[in-house]
Length: 126
Image (cartoon, rainbow, N blue to C red):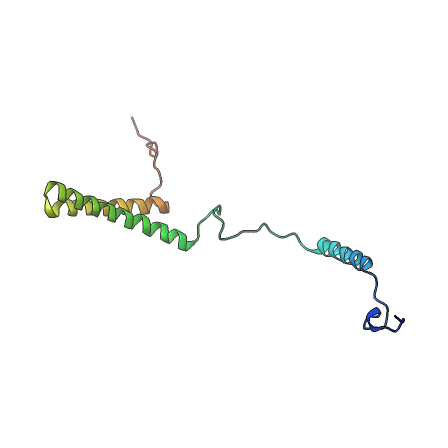
């Protein structure tokens, strides 16, 4: 092959450097770029299960599930109670209302609205 071969010369007419020289230049450029690049903040994925606060959709689903589970559990227990004891509508009505109250309490507890109380919140006078 002659020195005028198009494969041996770049677009500017100069001969192309060997691969080892190109690899060395690439490594130097990478290290220079890494030195000038600002440090990246820690990755915070919204899909990770260890996030500190759940997403709004996840919290809404949790709260609605807590409420619906309480109402369904009360209704099923009331229906079973009525079937076993023969108190046709009253067991269902009473336990459905208790399930509703339990569902509301679970939603309040899960949302943090009704936190755990200690008996020593208010001082008593002797």
